[in-house]
Image (cartoon, rainbow, N blue to C red; front, side):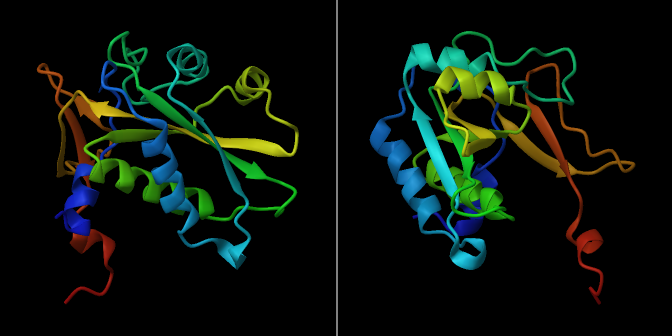
Length: 192
């Protein structure tokens, strides 16, 4: 059994996947069910989702995404390294005028459920929303917040201490993805 901390440590932002490893619709529904049971500001529950584990639809969704802003020379995962599934997270404006922090809470629940299944993901906020809305035929009352890529990770991600204030993630010559994290002592102001 995994502890919550172990799941959190396995839940990295993966950007390269084993595209041949299928993600079932049942797995995606289980992830959304975890999000559904998560906290919601004012309990408004204004989030809706479109799920895709279809290769043709995945290719259309992929074309609307920008990957890894700090890796300026990297256009995103190559064929064979792309996610096997996507979750498009949307705000239903008929249910609430704002979704506050529900998107992050739900996304974390989705990704922790994925990690528990040996999968990984990446929250992508750099989305061509108008184009994707048209591709998916999304009605006007649903507005895309972000897209969560899901698949079997095909890269190693390691955490390391921030050096000289530089928080930019990077890849070494072996393709290992390095993610600097600030120390606990910097985050908690009243540590004794």
